[in-house]
Image (cartoon, rainbow, N blue to C red; front, side):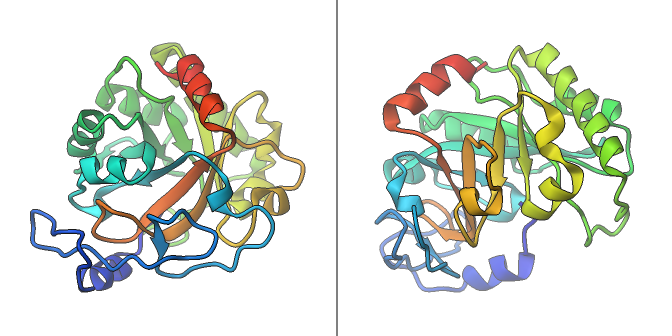
Length: 265
């Protein structure tokens, strides 16, 4: 989820291909067919998928932050974006400046949406949970909140890596506070190195959203269950004017509807 601003700016210079332009004048990127992805989506740095490719899953979605800028959520929904997690907060004092607009826009387009929190390793979990609760409304039908835990080697203020026991303990403080407030159990987002280093599979009965951009999760996280899979961070999709993360739900269309009915707020 950590964005590369230079890539975003470069992509914004690509020529349009019938996708219109953003309110700030950015043109939609050219989207060309990519093997292993749904027809409507592309990828600026495609992977040569082996085994079960993303296109073999029925339900696709995205996650976004300020780095996407303005988004045409109606166009995104029309072309296959079925869910979205929207960055809300980071640490204990930062709110994503596009959160409110994305929260409203996704809902208006009929895209089920939830909020995620980017964890900051130099602040107590209890403060971060309180900050998220302060800034993310309870909304009927919203997806469960997500705790995004990953290393932050490029942070200008906090690059520490606490021991695994501390990581898991802080995660549980945050997760339990959000569950008590929103009435639904949060998901955990993780990356391969972070997941393995910290034994995130030991956290108990939480659902996972896992990043794996160079192979199926069954190879990257052998033996571990997952509900959502982030398969690229350089995706292209109608309605977006820069790189965007693309994800799938681990199940059929009917299973996704059932999951929404059980897990929404």
